[in-house]
Length: 375
Image (cartoon, rainbow, N blue to C red; front, side):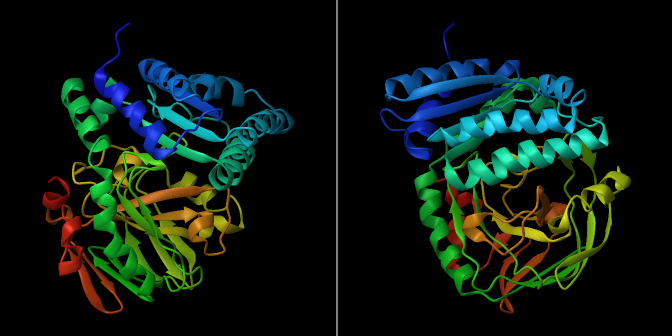
């Protein structure tokens, strides 16, 4: 089967530039869903050309569901230990995700879902992969994703490759002034419809994301000082977590802790997730999205958190490279879009307006506005 040249280019970019695969290194390539097989083929071929030693693993949410729904805690823990060992022995990990059934895991029994999050997602990925392995997680287009984006499959493929194969070196240069500004910032104040939120990011590292660990990419992230968040926020982008759909999530904070939360859909499951562990009622990330080609949500966080004119905050675990002291089995990104069509909004750093209605207003940040990143 002849592989689309854009897929070959994507594989080359990810392996050469994102994870920088070297000769003799072990690479764990995991693909999810039938639609990803052309990509898995391209990545395996490119890994061989670069001298890597691949372990390729085809996965699917239906397989996960069949296994987890019928497993005991001990079985799920043992399963996670197998994958943890594989991850520890790998130099590089690449995930190619093209979910054919986004909500497949939504009706997992509560106990099994908790064990899966704790031992597999938490133990294998959050605690083992993220701090110890060079990695890149990406999506791959299929008709389900096209439908979520309300596009034809052909139109979605064109959008996908534009957002994934843009000039990330240009984006990286444009991000540097924002990173520098955030590193000097203490107080953040966000205002929008249903939102008046204050917190500090003082002395928390700031990370540029320009095509290394995510494809598509386009965010600059840090974390709130754990106990500093006060106020309330209305996220205006629907979200799915472990296959469960949530809408219009609203949170209230007192000294960093979520003291009130609601979702228009599956509110009972939101309340349970916030009680998953001690860190699940605190926030672990704050980031600004800047990908110029991603303009509207499609219920896929890898795209939605990069929407131009958006910011996102994550419930739960903070990343080691921008650590605020919060640890959790959960890391759940929630997005607010501040473009005029989504209600607008303002972001202030130390009482200075830096972005209004989704556009950066400071001269040194103008290169991050979408028309400039497309050049």
